[in-house]
Length: 252
Image (cartoon, rainbow, N blue to C red; front, side, top):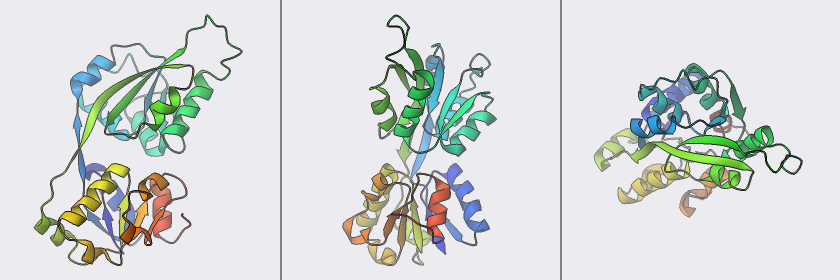
């Protein structure tokens, strides 16, 4: 199958390799690109949190490109969403990486149960655990919103920003001149950008038989009504689950 990959180029190339191994033809269509904020990362790491939290491997890449000496931070536990983000943290040198399965809200629950398992039984004088969230923009806010309800002191440092890639109509049409069989959508933001491009460049006729594989129900909600009957969400928010769905597995 011809499969459109909407991830940023670096991540998209990894997805392309996985697709080729499954016998598919990847079409790389990066819709956003990361801008790393080195100064913000340096300032964030002057704090002394009990733990770090990341909901994207891009945060780890932002640390890596900032040329910060991380030696004083590598012993701090890192809470990471998903196996890919956790692996990026380990490759960066962090020694204790705690992997959350699911989305940001699930990771917040994991942080709470690990760092503040029994708030009522703890002493009122005990300080709340301090977590530094290395975040990006835009983001959905599930992690921070959920953790705000817990007995955790949360600092948020925005150390990267995902900015839209500018695509012109002719370039888009060249990529999908043969209608793709499927489009992989990884976030609400990329789904929104994708369908804005479809509308503004009149690409809907090229997608009238395409399937839309969404990483979650939240992303599925962004798919416009004319395409909704051919869209589905993976059972769990992971690329592995998306690829299983692409190959005929269960989804919603």
